[in-house]
Length: 267
Image (cartoon, rainbow, N blue to C red; front, top):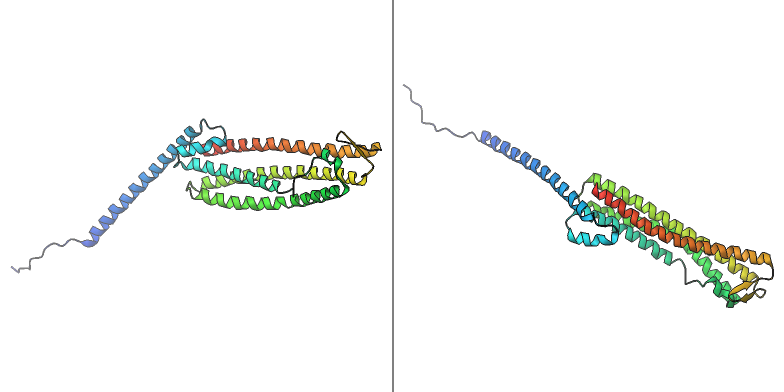
């Protein structure tokens, strides 16, 4: 018989590599499955924690304390972003409105002792205030855009998903629109006030030396002049009252926006 040299069986390396790769792929799929499952579980836990944390929260002032108790809750942090956005654009509107008047304007009843020069200077101040108010809307729009860009970046960093981010930014835009509309109303009431004030001062300049002052009241020789003055003074009072109503509206807007955000993060 013909003899053959002794040959040892050698492992087939390609087969072993293929088996190892298959096991690795299976392990990856299993890990992905459990990771997805864990992600869903974490989302449920986060949502439940959010609902529980906000159950007794009725206004934005209580939110900081809740965040301190749950610093890792991303939904609560998202709510905090929305609240800080509202605070920032509200403060910006108040700051800009405060810059409209070059200096504090006197009350109408205090003008009885004013000289002709004082009245002329007051009209210039009123004109400056009107011009400042006219440019306020543009400056506020710039503030809104800057705030929006920052809020979007901060919200994106929370990694809550594209759908949640899109919904969040849609509500942010609604919030900005509401505050812009409120600021526009405030500007309109200011414009009405300055316009009516200017009419009163213009009339006093025209009648300077003719009218008298008694107990802080202007007395004109002709009823038609008195009627014109009273109409302008009434318009000033109406503008002041409107400003007070807008302040109440501002507080209501803060509250309603916060309730809307609570519903959003609870969904």
